[in-house]
Image (cartoon, rainbow, N blue to C red; front, side, top):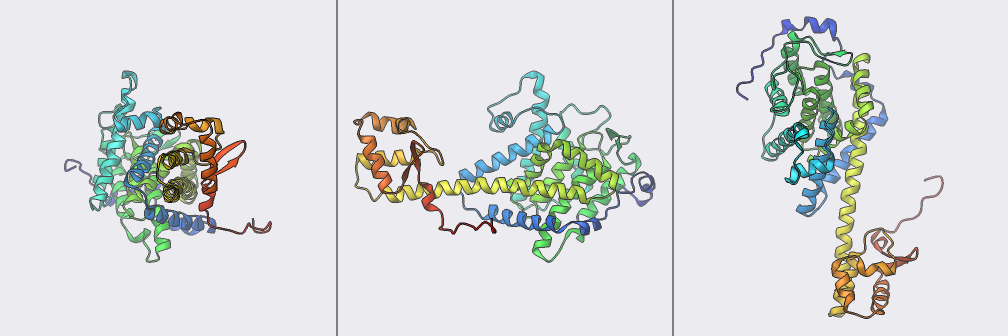
Length: 403
């Protein structure tokens, strides 16, 4: 990183004032956000706290992070045309997949993003501050592009010296890019996005990250890789706050990919309207939706852990012996929320199959009756299902006018 040089002075900005007046480094548009967005960001803060504080076994927490990482990597690369799937990217991450020669360049793109994200995560977990500077942004671009097939006139990690554009949009004048990158870094580290109110501080932290993304897209400071660099910078700004758990910091890249057509429209609209508001609203809603999915996934894992513990606790009160062992295996093998016919129950797992192969045909019915008496299983839809409903807190159904 020592070799990356970025120099900027105020006298370089005149062309940009004429061609891109919306690059103003102002966040005053945030005052125009409707109450619904602020309320949504309040919900996002609550969900981030829930995710951060959720008690999970280390292997489960790591598994959930890997899922989020894969979705984030696939999202940010797919937007740029990379066609590797989540399954293939997961294989790259685990060392079980190698792309064929014709797609080796796509694997390199994915590996670069994985390496950059993992390095950032390691640095943040290790206590590094990662202040935003032009040099750091250039380093992100270098990490993204190195050893990939990028545009001929691009140099990984170096600010461009030529005009670039995406479709009909032209990036800021090349002669101003050094200056603009410096202004952007200063702006992102200013107190513009800070507040002593914790609720507002969270909302401004999200806005800071989204504005960083938008301004890199507007300036287009590099010959290639601007989109991936913007999303990497956005990830850093979310993750370093300590307010957004690492898995949640990957949500936006996945959102942009899932809504790729709208993503492009919102970027274009932001330039036309000279306002950050629309893009912030669009990103905030994607963050909220993604956090709902993550919290639901964590809740399902917690419910399953609680259920398994409850089953063990209940069956441990049964008399010791082969009957208890077999009934425990059956109760734990039943999939959550699914009805299974009685005939299919012995084949749920190899352990259950082996247990029932040693006993007579009436044993299964006796075991089911025993588990039903203990309220661990219930009849449903011509079969049986686990009685996980028993763990739900009692509630009063909402009346029509409350629903």
